[in-house]
Length: 148
Ligand SMILES: [Zn+2]
Ligand SMILES: [Zn+2]
Image (cartoon, rainbow, N blue to C red; front, side):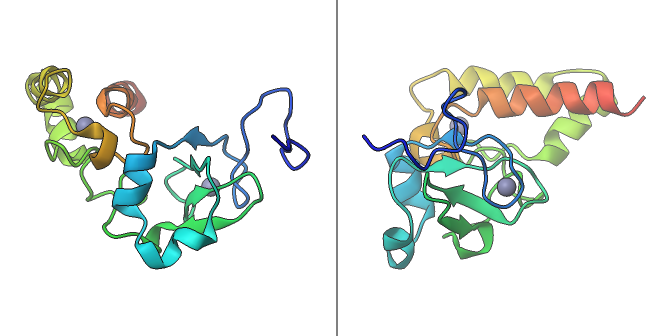
């Protein structure tokens, strides 16, 4: 494998060519589900996901080729604040915000429980192809700790 173009050989993780956020390795099922066929030739595998909300880049590869979020088959979290955190159960940031406002974890816990079950389809429904539990928990703690 040719590593000559990887900018940070020590970390081993390519950085987003637009904002410099370390990429998250993306599963192939997720790529196939979010990237329309017409864009497939624009990016090599392995592909990485930029999860910085205000960056337009969704996926990129080790050669700094990119596919922007507005080219994908549907809106994705966190590029679109209205999009579900994971398509499998449709939990949105608003749901998490309501939990935080109520001081409870009803919605978050329900999704986390379901995401661990056989119903979960994160491999194709979450933008990275990994379990959405991490994204849900990260947002919950961000909202709970961030506001005050
Ligand atoms: Zn980026
Ligand atoms: Zn999921």
